[in-house]
Image (cartoon, rainbow, N blue to C red; front, side, top):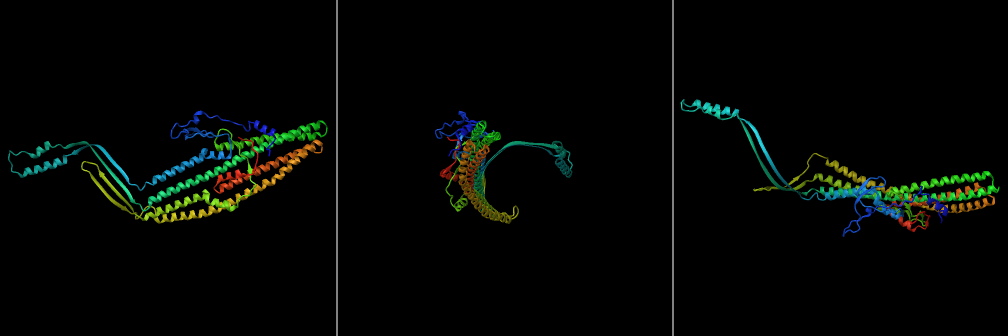
Length: 517
């Protein structure tokens, strides 16, 4: 099945301002490898610049991307270049590390304490009130004694010798060391509930990543085959332009020989101008479609798809087969299951509010004369904080929410699968039905051109026949693309997007493609 005439193919290839062929040469430093006996072929981690946003990304591996890609090569490349999937993977890694951190929460907590201190104590002490009381006391005591000249005045002596204030100052250093341990030997399941909750959140992150991956695969198929359809449309427009050039040349000869009127000659010229404009527009649309594919694969040059549009004439399996796949593999149900697991672990955690916590503890001072303390403690929360009954009711409601969500998601999935299944069958039937239109329009065009040579038909007849032939071939190509897109949507709704490739390999109808390796 020829896509277009050789002249049309050469014309499209030569117009590199609309569909350029760019071969980018990478620097040798980008493909250096680590010289390691254990990992001889491991690429070097480096800082790369994203070709779309021009932002730098640290700790990245260089990936060589061919400008000619099959669909399967693009599928293999997509997870490696998608920033969204890389961000999702980082979230999964973070959640996984949080789970690992929570797994040690019941382990003994051992700590050491070391202290070294230097101190200075300085204080002015007021002694005047004490001094006054002492002097008064001695004076009272002297008054009770017999008066003897030789007895000294003790009150006066104290008053003269004892100062009114005293400047107290001390300084020095101290040091101490100790080791202690706290071991939660019974937490009523709190630790297990927290660890399980963290694991369930990791599972939710994995389900979200799987959903995003499936959606990206579907986007890749859409952009890949939209580009193929746009290239086919550009070819068909170029083919129509070539045909009308021949018609225009024939009309010029017939006009010069007097077989057709001037109005017929002008109509041929007008149709040729329109065909040229439409061919240029089609090339621009093809380039835009290829740029959309390029952006998804994050290259700085256009990606040229080599896998053709296809249609399988074989009937699809029964819709029940695909519905069973969806109920077993769709990430939406996996996310609901992760949500339910989280609700169950929250319920278990709330239930522990009525149970005690038992700790084994000990502490010892490392000194010349060591001292230590050890014991067991148990604690119950009697009142205060979060309401335990309300927390239990909340977690029970979340479990019920997850159960009902599973029913809703399942119902929606079954309906979505059935819709996509019907879309694939409709596109298959439409493609097959349009083949007769293509054959008929091709024969009518042949006869109209012969009629123009014989003077039976006008240039308008030829232009109309050419338009119908172009329309029939374009509609059939669109039906093939609709078949491919509907099949991709069906596989995504089943949660098995890469199963699309099985139908690609077994397809018995393949449309032509411009680019081949």
